[in-house]
Image (cartoon, rainbow, N blue to C red; front, side):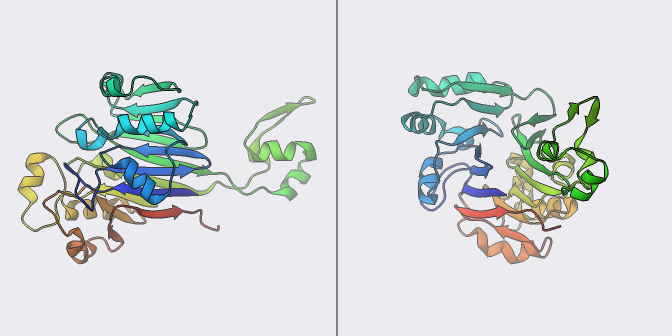
Length: 303
């Protein structure tokens, strides 16, 4: 299962009811934060989630509405007596940008490990899941992220017995380990059925529609995408500032065949984004015009 909380849905500047961009995920004891706009900590507190277990912080890009909340968050994590390293992932220049912000948070009880993305697409293997960063089209270098959790096939005891695999090895093989014992090589595929559907989540903001989004979001259970403008007639402004309208995001969701679309990163001029939900659903029915704090738990199907 992946716990998903869209902490902040605002773009450019915070509003009294809308904090800046941030998404938090929890999977198997690991906390992942994508972007850290102003108000991230407040939104997290309101939700009742803790900053201490955040192990990975990803940045789409380095505009202030996506990173301005970082120094305070790091201080909070330090004050919570976190000592385990924190991995940060982002475009080139990550260490330089974070070091500059840390002028007001210079001493931390944990190490920061920097992973600067070099290519247009980069796959990062984590503990039990994969993060794929893919470049999108904004006026600075910007990336979207896909989180994928693979799911092994069911354990087949009858199959293990028929192959005369020692009982003491079953658990290790079920966990994906390859074992050599007494001159025999035992592999997980000898005891597992076909791979089952896992979980997939894709997140991107601050971009024009590009094919890389469709490619990487394909089949995602949840697609979280910016919708800077919902009002009719904003197409040219979206193009000028390299953002998206609600309707462009919905078309991407439709092309990618995702399970559900959450819109986020609204312009501060868009006072009531929900007013346009009905129109967007004409393009992609399973669209949610999300508000701060929207939460869902992605669960495995029962197959």
